[in-house]
Length: 95
Image (cartoon, rainbow, N blue to C red; front, side, top):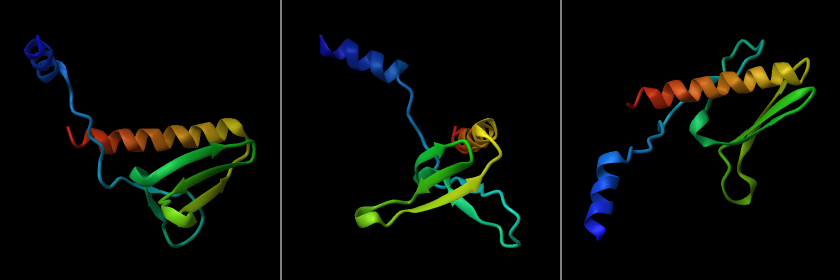
């Protein structure tokens, strides 16, 4: 009974891959370009005036964050869409 289920899983299951390093350029006016690795992003907060990207967290609050000012929530959602597109490109490169 177990053999057909295992066989079906092996034939129909698809591996779930994530890129080990997915650099994304943080937008800004600074001369120095800053990139974050999207594979370590923990969460993103989209507000009316800013987008906060929290990444690289570990024990005892060792994480970092980037706060980007936006004109409105729609601009923040567009920034989030750009993050998603970049992550998909990185994951697509593995296939």
